[in-house]
Image 1 (tube, rainbow, N blue to C red):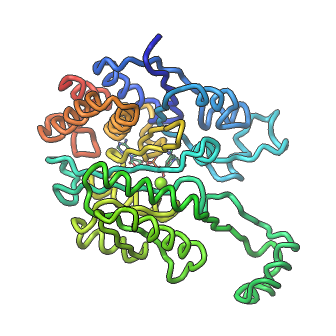
Image 2 (cartoon, protein in one colour; image 1 turned 180 degrees about the horizontal axis):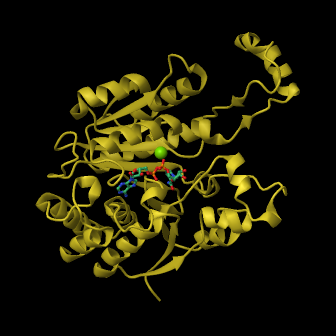
Length: 372
Ligand code: NAI
Ligand code: MG
């Protein structure tokens, strides 16, 4: 039996192509794994009314790790229309399989390294090397949402919250509520993960991102918790910034930052900003990490307009595979893979369209494999 059981979840659109390309590289590395294909994505929603079928959940329960491509998601109303006719009107509600997977398996760390590999024509600044820790299970993604708002809830809010009186005359159906729910436990474990990483990797500083001056209850809790955790790591500097200011400072003085930690939504926003600084979606890789399972993926989506053309950049997925190797303890292979990617980028002979080149997805993967 192979040493590792890896769930292989290509998903939709270019997810399939970038995963095929990544397999070329993993095979060349002689990574001792059995790849177990799993069903996820739009196709399964249309056919079965579930984008993340139970059999895929069961698969994830028995593997060492998973690699995931990308899926297509659509708003609830248009999703219903694309269901198989026999399934329509039967109460199937579309839910993002990724958010579900993160919550179901308690994959509370979303780890997103953003490194500018030398010679990438898309680098905002050479030498950037930021690491983002995004909380992955709560905050505005908790799924506690109301539209329409039930009258019991609006009555209760009217009694408990003074600011809510500003909305008391808004007719039912004319407003919606999404609850931001943050726990001390959830805040503590993501901040601790960031500091542990900083300590292990000799990073100098952790910056806590929030909006605690306005969103006092939840972001206040996050920031207070972060300050407590920081006391346990006296050798690592901690600072904090509001999410809005952070976006500005990151562009102005990116080298002032090192490890960033944030609640779910701010972490999502800052991830795209940082990914763009080191080459954009073709380079953004990510790990959803829990105590027992970790699922690695490129941060980009299924890019339907490019699907089936073998033209997108597989490096984000290849770098996600590198993260997976690292997490499994295969650090030698992870290091070799990263060096191979860095060399291909530095040489600049093979470039996909996003890098201004004309090479295919497969050619990029083959170029990386050839360096291994
Ligand atoms: P997207 O990330 O799929 O693509 C946006 C654009 O970025 C593409 O049109 C393309 O120009 C570029 N791009 C993306 N990946 C690239 C790559 N590997 N190489 C070169 N260029 C690349 O985002 P979009 O178009 O907003 O969403 C498409 C679908 O993907 C939607 O259904 C969305 O819900 C879903 N999505 C899924 C995600 C996931 O599976 N984790 C994340 C983001 C979006
Ligand atoms: Mg995102």
